[in-house]
Length: 120
Image (cartoon, rainbow, N blue to C red):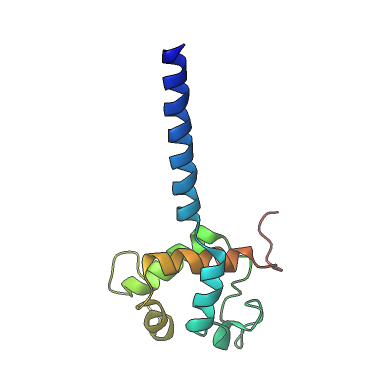
């Protein structure tokens, strides 16, 4: 009986820690909303993040979260970095972002309604 209780307690602890880790890794939507406002992302990508001011700028609303994270980190690395992206505007915008900012921004933008076709 004691052995079963100890096993259940251990498994419960593991489950709680995994859930907490996944929640933290997923990003905070409210903090992401604050970050996109702070860094004025709407100036180029549109107030709804799906109506950019230039047709060559991407629509961000509803985009896959992992893609958004990868893109922001690639802009931080720049064109000379491994797997980096070169763009003067986005490079400057992405440089001051912490890893948490990147996760939060990606979580927020992913949560928005979108006209993107995510699967055919």
